[in-house]
Amino acid sequence: MLAVAAIASTGVATLCLVPTRVLLDQWAKVLSAHMRDIGRLGDGQRTIAPITVATYASAITWAPKIGDRFGLVIVDEAHHVGAECPSEVLEMLVADARLGLTATPPLRESAGALECHIGPVVYSLSIDDLVGDALAGFDLLTIPIRLTPEERMRYHAARSVFAKAFAAFQRAAPGADWAAFVTAANRSDEGRAALAGWRASKAILAYPADKRRVLRELLRRHSEQRTIIFTGNNATAYEVAREFLVYPITHEIGRTERARALEQFRNGDANALVSAQVLDEGLDVPEAEIAIVVGGSGNMRRHVQRIGRVLRPAPGKRAKVYELAVEGSIEVDQMNRRRRAIGSGAESYS
Image (tube, rainbow, N blue to C red; front, top):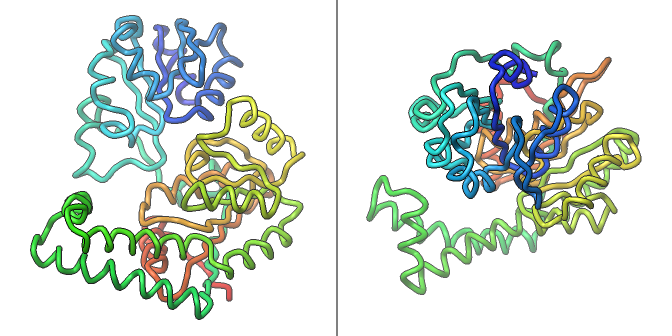
């Protein structure tokens, strides 16, 4: 709504930059309801018009060729500026009118690229400010997950191999980041074994037997409500899709199939979708009421974005967000950090 108003107000050719193909389609459809001839760059489409929507990836290729054609640039999910949306793209655009939109602005100390290429934050609201008006009310529910004895044994064995090497690295290089550890670890057999242990421990937490059981119960409980399942990786998303016969939405799914699945979800012919990351941002389906986070991360921004998928307002709606966290694992610490970022109370269900 804000973007449409900005385009109408400035009256100049506009380039809208979005992170995903799902958002490319969504933006083009919304803009088409107000304006004619919307151009698209991305997802196999290459049309340029006075109002054009482009994925970040396509903009990297096209910005040197068309950067002088637009007087306004709008960046959706603007917290990606400087990362997934490279600063170089914005440097190749001559537009002096710039608008960044995001539900999760970066922390002040990491907002340099955004402020340099778009500008400072001029307006913001918290989730609590919006609940009841622009956002639906919601309950944040934690379900503790218990590993089987065999899963627990494998998890601790894998985690201990990683933890020993990582602790030694931190003592030797205090203040070094994760990328530095990965670089150093790949130089030795012991380091490579530590990385293998880290990957193995993550794989165990991704979808143990108890998560499978709880997910089955939740899908049965909410079988009449539209539900989005979030996993930590594509492999788990496909496993969930096969087991429960729900549509997977990943970057590997083609445009036609993806559009068909999303349309069936919107109109109620399909009540569940599963995704690792593709649906984290931007999906606008007010009818979606339930989010089940099977696998999360310590990334607070991503978690807020995921919750936002079921907070689109609808009459009488109160959303539920279930977080599945393995007891005695790093998932609990990650969940607590995400909870503090949201600033909302929560209930625990066993």
